[in-house]
Image (cartoon, rainbow, N blue to C red):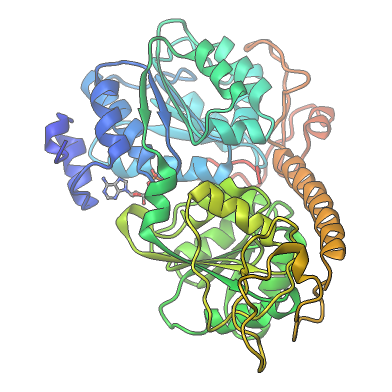
Length: 502
Ligand code: AMP
């Protein structure tokens, strides 16, 4: 498939695509769009950054555009489920962009904000609903949305849904879908629980795999810098002030660390905004908008908050902390180098992180080049470390030899790295403690993400059951339900809002 014209999309869509300056379909688009137009089910293995939004949005808009029906109150023809508010907003923007020459309406439905304007849109009637699972169920339970006229169902980022504990909600929603429908399913990975859902959801699907790992990694110039933990803030500042046109996303492991880094950068006159699960929905959207509109050049994020973020022109991704899960590395660096652009991904690696670095390199099947100019010698705290992954010493002295791997390097020079442990045993203990701490932080991030989003999970009733639950901003499911009768949202935003979900 060479051009978009060969995809046989209706003229208003061709015009919108040309307006976006898309020349050729991405692999996920060229493989998905023709079969989706034929109304086949699709099982797509792809992540954001591959152009998958257009891969499902264009066939849906094509179908709805050809049918040219007016929207029905409460009864959408298409439903897209996304794990986070941010992703839902992005998908909504894509529907608006690709569908701008069509007379079709869509609504966004997500938790963590007043439901008033969402309900109003649904009552007016929309062709497509783009929703996060918790709020959708909530509105279904209240009778504000019915899926009996649904023709196309999209489940996006299913693996993320699984991570965030949305699977029970998804199963409930799937139970309400009409048997005769088209389903398009996307996930970056295919864990057993995901396969189980695909078996329930899809009928004789066309399988599309765009192997995003190698795609995204190839376009991005990667490097690792060995630095003691205490030296990271200064190094970050040095890197971020090196280029005037730089636009960077900095990833930290914890929310606390994201706040610390953001404050420090701002103090140093480098404008940065933070996005993580302890921030309110509106604060998160404000930070994203500020970054998108270039009021700030640096966005400091945790993994869950940043998932799915698609912002053009990100020149650098900096892993202030390496992720615990190697897959997260691929997701992170995929924030740069979007849609063919070049990007730079820099990872800081401190003593105790070498094991994580090794796992990442194993996953991406390549050794990340060391920035020798900025690296310092670190003690290796990873017993598995087999090669001398150290750079130049910070002051004087020679490079640590590559023969000094793992345990044998116990006590080797850690000049200038006051906070780093010097022995492998101590390093192992530190790593264990750190892993425990990160696991706890991660669990609390997901929990807070689901605040206001996973509502209706425990006490979900059949749609139309008339049970009214209102989840105002930041309300947990239980508090929201206790707050009956329905709280009227005073600050309902005109744009139908999205959910929490870091
Ligand atoms: P997605 O994976 O859907 O989040 O898309 C990632 C980025 O690629 C978005 O900024 C899209 O606007 C852009 N994009 C999608 N399809 C194409 C295409 N065929 N050509 C150029 N850019 C595209």
